[in-house]
Image (tube, rainbow, N blue to C red):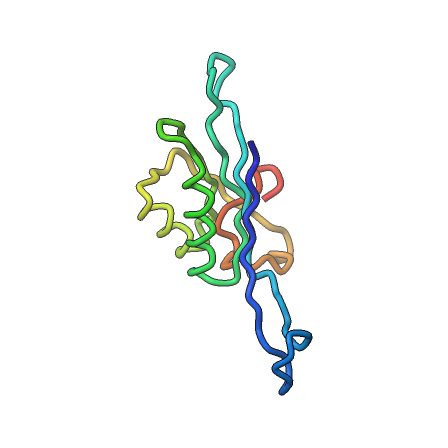
Length: 127
């Protein structure tokens, strides 16, 4: 089972209080999906990610919403960018432990990547 969660805000636009004057904006989204640890597993573990959020509060809410869908006894994993200390703290506070580390490396700058908005990578291959 794959779960996708989005966080939205709705704000009034202009002076008119009419419903047509409201603006809805996506402020974050995340996904959780089955993953395979080994060919011997009968139960799939879960992979959390991506999680992209405009704030720590939204990132934490998305993480919680996604991980609460995992059945008891089923492990889950998330690849958190080390450059986002807030995301690292959310993972630590939830009891997750680091299994390994990788480094994201760029030539000629970072290409405009805002690591502060990344709370969980899509995959190590895609970032």
